[in-house]
Amino acid sequence: MNKIKLGDSNIEVTEVCLGSMTWGQQNTQDEAFEQLYYAIDERGINFIDTAEMYSVPPAKETAGSTETFIGNWFAANPGKREELVLATKIAGSGIPWIRNGGKIVGEAILPAIDASLQRLQTDYIDLYQLHWPNRTSPHFSRHWPGAVDPTSTDVEQDQADMLGVLQALDEAVKAGKIRACGLSNETPWGIAEYARIAEQHALPKMVSIQNEFSLLHLKDWPYLIEACIHNNVAYLPWSPLAGGALSGKYANGNKPKGARWTMVQRNGVFRDTTYSHAAIAEYQKVADRFKLSLTQMCLAWVYQFTGVTSTIIGATTVEQLKEDINAHDLVLSAEVLAAIDEVIKKYPVPF
Image (cartoon, rainbow, N blue to C red; front, top):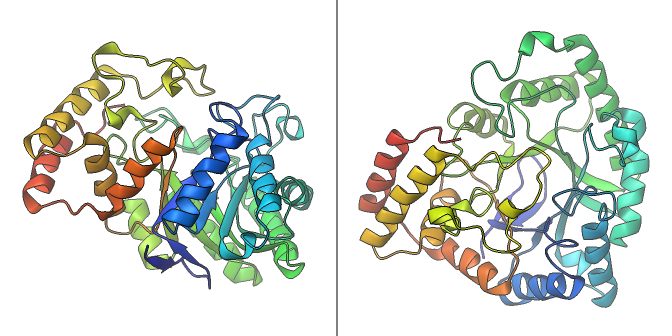
């Protein structure tokens, strides 16, 4: 699998990243190990993404379990750690069992890194990310007009917090605990402010951002992706299948046992709307017309999208993982892309 530079860093990652948020709740440790063996040994993926709050949906009992599974896999496979690019994240505010729900501040960074290192059974993290901003941001279905009030943000406090975070990340880089740092669920303003503050104070630059991006959730195009391209920030889409919805498994009111939409979600099952189902049905027609798997068509569209560095995929079975990775080799014809564009025009914001 091809490798590509991770933004303005010296790290190279494969164009597919193995996500892990189901490990510890929907997947056992043995199932996680099976996915790791397949993705790394058989398919050549070198990029793994996790977070201190995983598994998902988050729960006090399972917080940190995904990192623990990965650490146990490293312990069982000596020498593998050095072959991989390992990314994890510090949780933002609102999770009461993680730092009493506190926001991301400089004082929280080093203890959180040390705790992740212990669970991961490693002495360094390649990419350390901020899971979501301290201010309320237009993510998790808050992108509709009026859902977020930017004038309520205390900009000076936010900037002071950013400076403190970057100073702590600088300390972690100098100590060899992390190699690079990045953002998640951020906006063009957040990217620009972190870049400005980093340059002003000679602190580490944010080299990547992971945001939700799929045929059901296109709000990052063109403005945020343009900011990534021109600032050399790697764009890492998460949920390229819209939480599994673009596999078609929820069509006709289906709710498969153990599937994500059957679980209580922290932000609600916000993708489950009339327009989402209508859009998915239209994408299914396109896939059927061109004799494609709906899952692979939707993934290939994201994999090959302008500005995408590495796409974060997740699966609960190895069979799903195989299909997801195989989609990387699928080249969509001009006719398929034109048909997809027609659906986008009908349903540009389905949830």
